[in-house]
Image 1 (cartoon, rainbow, N blue to C red):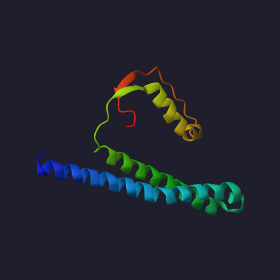
Image 2 (cartoon, rainbow, N blue to C red; image 1 turned 135 degrees about the vertical axis):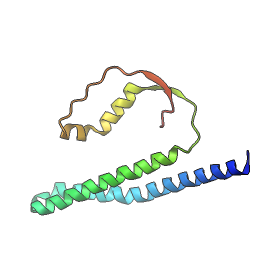
Image 3 (cartoon, rainbow, N blue to C red; image 1 turned 120 degrees about the vertical axis):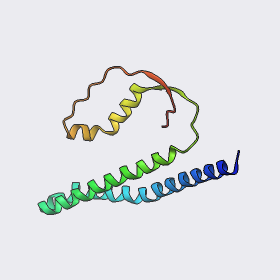
Length: 127
């Protein structure tokens, strides 16, 4: 391996480690902000006027958006990691997991999800 290739590999590892640290370290307090804001809304939201409810809703929405951005940063950082051996991945199971994570948003939007049977593919299940 050339020095340039080693430098590139080291830089990619350093970036991945940095992105993970940033995502993890910022993610924990951000999750607390979002969850305590939701708790405040559910337990004391009735005491707020419409403007206060709007502000609290904006706090939660912005926190959720920032969580998604941090998750995206972490996902991006993982693109530079070495690929793992491929294995059979049931796309139907993956879809069920995704729908489970999105069930509140799907219900809130009254969305109807229709999917035909999906294949089993060879992939890195973690990605």
